[in-house]
Amino acid sequence: CIVRNITLKGLQGFIRRDVVVPVLFDQAVISIVLPDGKDVARLNGYVESLAAAQAGIDCEGVRIGISFVDDDPKKLENLSHYIASL
Image 1 (cartoon, rainbow, N blue to C red):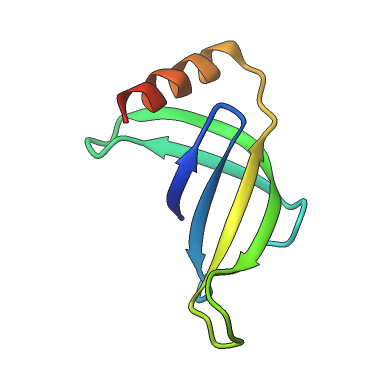
Image 2: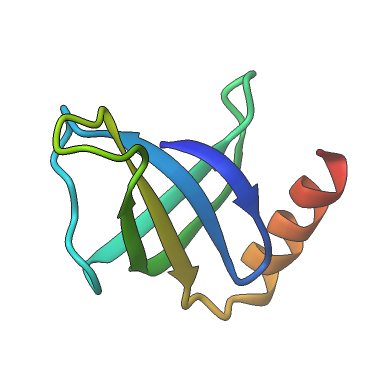
């Protein structure tokens, strides 16, 4: 997933159609990893929205929205620090 926007409540991103495309309300686990391999957070969520990235049946990608459902304070703190560093 290419992340376009991330907040403490969820993320908006882009996935290619050549991967398995999820359906609405599918469970999602988001692992945020720094380029050096260090884990930032692993958050639970669900697929909130899906839309074609371009007009036409042959579009290459899907815009995806994922809402986080985790309420672990440590995970949210780590995510907050990560977002602030962007």
